[in-house]
Length: 493
Ligand code: SF4
Image (cartoon, rainbow, N blue to C red; front, side, top):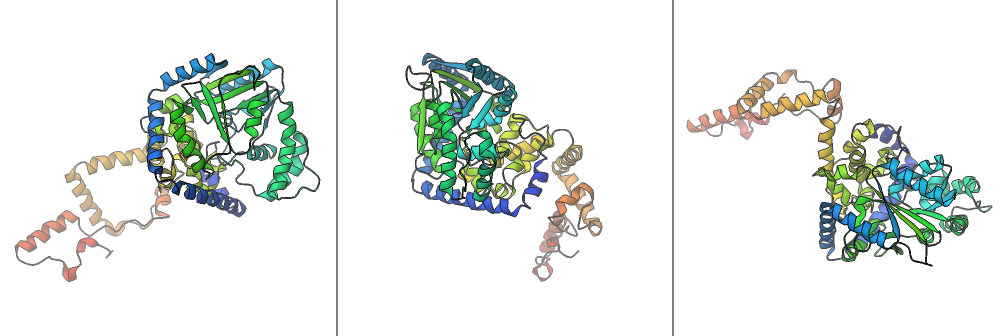
């Protein structure tokens, strides 16, 4: 994956710092609650939302089951329509392909359509090393680029910035990248958008090469689809002579009829709109119309390994709508940077460790970056059970190196809980020693008892109490519970 976020501390350390930033928490809360509210309204308009969601899940699952077949169909159709298809096993290979293609044009600049796949592989950094400048044209991506920042949200990468900060960034940095910000620029959103429009127009009109991703790739015709709100993508997809699209292999849908389902699910889930303002579709190259040299780079970069995992593969259904980010109480307080990857929030917590592996401390911390409240699953338009994957990945982390004590404790628990005689003996021993059990655990257990009380241990195990209770009853002595309160209920330590 991208080198962009390498060096980030693990989630708990990064989040601890983020939650102390009151401005960040304010920006995030305002933005996520606004989008969340809009989504709720437009989703509520559809009586068949649950059926649509089921259809989206089923289409993605079917596509992933036969991914090899659909990828070959896509390649055949795209090639037949005049595109050149490339296969990239990892980020390095994808970056090398794109760099070679740009160099072949003789150009030193490219314009970019907002694309998670190119961020994932760190394409801008790889192009910069080859002496090629990539210009982001999405407004939020432009803000991130101008401020040498990292994206913090899938849909709104600069969600952590307020308009005063954006005004300052534009005024300070635009001149270094092209057309400067106008004198006396204010922080009114319309003024800021106009400054960006003027700045970008020069890029659109001079660029010979564009790089994009795609929201969907339709196998039956070899077409690529980009959905967007600003129209910048359409400028990049139509004006330059060469177009290079980097697309994750999971973006496939088999047919146009399948795409129809996602055209309803995605805009409602992401921007809270019934329909996205711009939908661009291109199929290979058309003589005299749009880019004449069209390339499709199909990116694996850990996706095949993810597909091999029975539980984890559902993350590949993701259509990057960001509804799970906007509802997540952990994301709302910790912000996107804490996740150390271009995929923040709940989907990042399950996707990043699968694409990168859980060997790194940052990746290993992500499956724990959740309260498991389940809100992400409720809003996901393709019904990805994120909590299930989180627990599954926690198991993977815990079975790796560095968790010997935890594994030994679990093995001991398995032995005791699997044998009722051993369990009874352990309960009696615990009851006998109940007076010596501390209220707070020492050492590594301290983190657990910092936020929880150790439950009271009853003076005798339930089995013993029950046996005596039954004997008492047989002797006709009633329930044996003085005052209706059982000894077993404890609380008398
Ligand atoms: S996991 Fe679901 S809710 Fe989250 S971004 Fe992906 S599709 Fe949207």
